[in-house]
Amino acid sequence: EEGKRNKERNEGIMEWITPQSFFSSITAVGVASYLLYDFWKRREAKAAGIPGPVGWPVLGSTISFVTDLSGFSTKNHNKYGPMFAASIAGTTTVFVSGPDLMKQVLRTSD
Image (cartoon, rainbow, N blue to C red; front, side):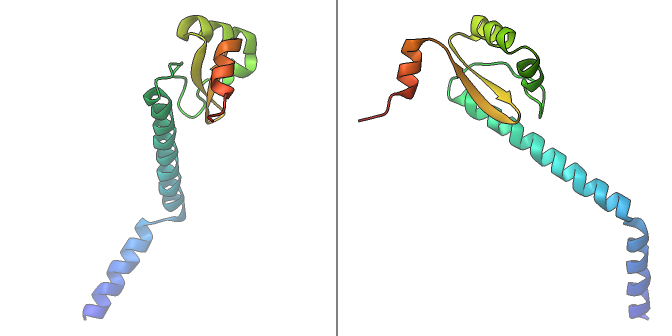
């Protein structure tokens, strides 16, 4: 009797979990995980004290960077200064301008 009830319960669960709902659930968890990861990576740049544009989730500033590199650099340099961070293609990228600041960034420790 109990075995029959367990079998009926398992069959009911299998009807509820379709391949489409399973795939949708896995996809939703994956997208949510990536968005949290992307948010966390942006916080690291901000925590380091490097200002920059927020950009769109996942895309960041990729579209404006690719379509108008010169305008993107000039606009953000004017707004944030000679060093700013932006999310480009899912990677936090630090932009540096000026020879003195570039030397400071590229200098190796003794």
